[in-house]
Amino acid sequence: MFGISGKVALVTGGAAGIGLAAADELLKEGARGVAIADISKHDGEKTIDILRKKYGHEKVIFVRTDVTKKSSLDDAFKHTLAAFNNIDIVVNNAGIFNDKNYELCIDVNITGAVHCLSLAIDKYLPTYKSGSEAVIINTTSEAGTFVYPFMPVYSATKSALLSLTMSLGNRVFFNRNKVRVVGIAPGLTQTALVSSIQKDAFNDLCSEYLGKDFGSYENQSVDYVARCIMEIIKTKPSGTVWIAAEEKELVEFIPALPTYEYEDD
Image (tube, rainbow, N blue to C red; front, side):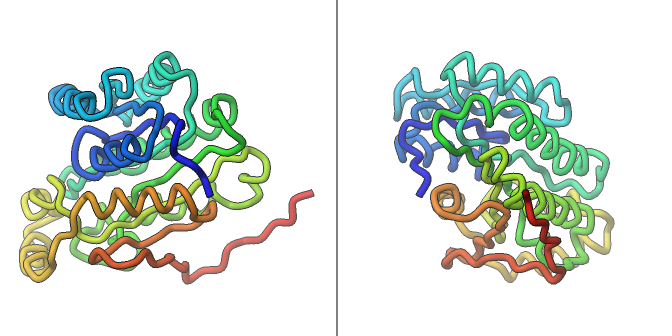
């Protein structure tokens, strides 16, 4: 089991929603330090004020970060190291729903996620982890685990991140770099993303069906998702993705296509 106590974490999209809940849960579990990386300066400063009052001023920093720019994310990693000397956990969580502005949706959800993965795996975690192993957890979505026609761009971006998780988490890579890459695929969760769902739909037809569809679901809490993230960080194997829906037990996503198996020398 991977112990969170004493570890240092960087959380992208950490100023609200699932990211904030995950940061809070990491500190509750005894993390030595948490860096909140988010594009919103207002939300970020508000968040660290809340977390510092609960856990201590020295435990939390905020770095204004635009994940679509690799240099901005690189600065977030550097600020984390400057404050805490190590990085052991990366919660690769920044994401948006905006099928109408599909270029931005792709830039944040895919390009931003790949920037984070590249920096974490190739530059920072293997060198600056405090123990024998480091962990990246990617926030994908249950909408990326099946064909959901009413959120075509968002679902596609989350499917891409799901595939990235299983590829970069393959044991061939883990055996070399000792960075475990795992994923969580939350179902419908109480976040700001959900509140804008019809307004930012791909087109009017998608908006109409989303309105009908989402009215029949009960949102789960961000606190439940955050607890699931802790469980995944602690116990789940590299290259796996876990569906967290309806506040039930985690269910492993099993891809329809087989995984290419390579025997490492």
